[in-house]
Image (cartoon, rainbow, N blue to C red; front, side, top):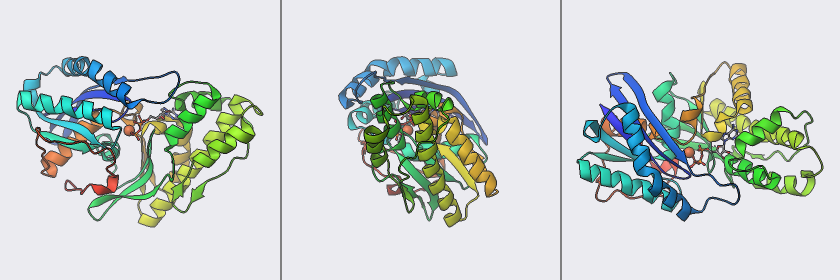
Amino acid sequence: MYILGIEATAHTFGAAVLAVSGTKKRILANVRDMYKTKQGGLIPVKLAEHHEAVCAAVLTKALAEARVTMQDIALIAVSNAPGLGHALKAGVIFARSLALLHKKPIVGVNHCIAHLEVASLITSARDPVLLYCSGANTQVIAYDGGKYRIFGETLDIGIGNFLDTFARKLGIGFPGGPIIETFAEKGAQLITLPYSVKGMDVAFSGILTYLERKVLGRYSREDICFSVQETVFAMLVEVAERAMAHCDKDELVLGGGVACNKRLQAMAQIMCEDRNARCFIPPNNLLLDNAAMIAWTGWLMHTKGGVSDDPRTLATHPYERTDDVRVTWR
Ligand code: ATP
Ligand code: FE2
């Protein structure tokens, strides 16, 4: 069966076609078009305008790459939570229109849960702890008693937003994470920064203020980026390890765009080796916002969990939390 996934929770509009047959699963197309800015933050209305402008072309490209037509699609999955209201609406209205026009079943997917479920699409992880580090979200998640529970999270901004905001202050553009990574590779001196772990939670805004007031302009960009990465990634890996110990789980999966970072990946791998656990890292195109993870989660929810939504009324939920969703498909 062919599943069409649509992703539009934030800056990326994506369309993907996934083929599932028995235990075989293949991503036939995973097309993304990302809204980028040189300066300033993401303006929600502009995101919606971007998604409306590219949605038809992205869908056409995905169908062509997969060599299927809308007639072949058996299910439409769309991310309807959480995210920026305008962006979410653009994606959901597009998916609802497709479902009504082509008379297809539709299912609304929580974007954060999709970042987690993608692990079961391409790895052999069975019951992992997820270190989910993206733009807006930073959470340590694990399955327990019918829900994906959040064991630790950021108390203020997401790790990606922290990196992007800091990159703007350094004047190196958006998205800042990958550029910080390049500078960090050439850094050597570890500048002491605030280390902000509170129990199972982390916080970044104090580090941002400290960087602005005490660090910027006093050290090289390379050393600053190196120290930022060493400090904040150590914080993330520490809370992930604590969750693994607490839940007695021996698998870790990385998720979200910041998990593309090679230094974060290396630190997570070292931690897992130390505790005889396995570390799973999906490829970059499945770590960043993408529609293949939405298609896969939609398939799980629909076929294993019996979830189905009404294409005339499927709503968006900008503030839905990971642990608001009852997991019926495991
Ligand atoms: P969310 O999933 O919470 O809605 P999002 O959609 O912004 O957030 P993703 O697409 O998963 O998140 O990730 C985007 C973030 O990943 C950006 O903040 C970007 O700077 C960061 N990022 C991408 N590549 C890297 C890298 N190599 N190192 C560090 N950060 C990175
Ligand atoms: Fe995301």
